[in-house]
Amino acid sequence: MFITGIYLDGKTSKRHKVRLLAVNENEPITFIIDEEEQLNTDPISCETLFSLAFSQLKITPQLGNTPREISFGDNELFITEDNNGISQLIAIFSGSKSTSILHKLETNLSLVMIFTLATLAIVWASFVYGIPKLSETLAYQLPEFVTENSTSSLDLLDATLFDPSALDESRRQHIDLLFLPYIQAHARLKPKLLFRSGMGANAFALPGGEIVFTDKLVELAESDDELLAILFHELGHLEHKHMLRRMLQGSMVTLAVIFITGDVDTFDLITGLPTLLVDLSYSRQFEKEADRYALDQLDHFDLPLDSFAQIMQRLDRDKEKSNTSQRSKSDFFSTHPLTEQRILFVEQYKNELQAH
Image (tube, rainbow, N blue to C red; front, top):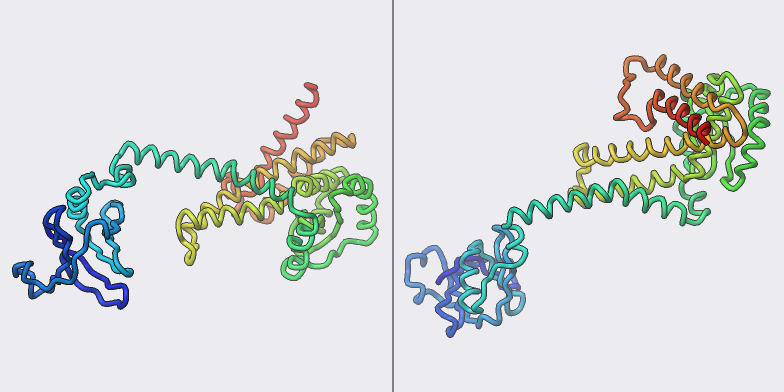
């Protein structure tokens, strides 16, 4: 039997077209030069390169229709696309079937389907449960100095987004005094109240403990209780380490997508979209946790629960005025739950309290 392939001597990059000649298990395997001008000649008359015993050959297992490799000697290599020929060669000289376990698996449609579904289930479970749980564990295990020194981005926000607050000094002092007992009650979180302008009505809780209120948010609120509802929401982000967990999850999701797709150099929309969608899902979950924390604190300090719903409605109306053309009832691309859902959650929370 003859097997045509390419021979590499392991010393140079030159490729030689050769044929592997095998007669029977009692004869050595011969490699002969198979130049184009010799294709129609008697192979016995062709120039013989060398002969080897079958035991000296290391043959790679079959994987689909990929070329097979036979290594021997000093980094020498014989490469062929004749999978059937290699299978016959192994059968003749070893007396056993040559099909590898991997090849059996890949040619069995039922097993392929089972392993595909199992793989998808594992990937889904990793994204939905594994990555969030791992990031939560890491966030709570990291030393405090790591959080304080490596994740605070206030300087960057001040340089790129925020402007100094233009609130009246008396208004700022009033809010400072209003928040003081509640900030002291959460001293373990090391919260620090700050005011900034330069963007719409919003509030942020940064990993280092900074809680930023924008001037427009202060102006939008119509009562102290509404401002306290926002404060408790941001304290909820600090309590649950949401920003740090989001950073960890985002990194893990990105690495997982790159690992699955193998796309490192061109991480474009196609590979980045799953990361975006998963991150949005995680963010909405964090907002729901912070909402519950805010309601827990309002109830704990005997403050009206409706103040949370009221400030959410004001924020929604303000957003509608400033961005009417782009506003959508769908929360598919939103990091926050819909306002209607948050108001409904307040009612559900009140019902839970009454039930107990």
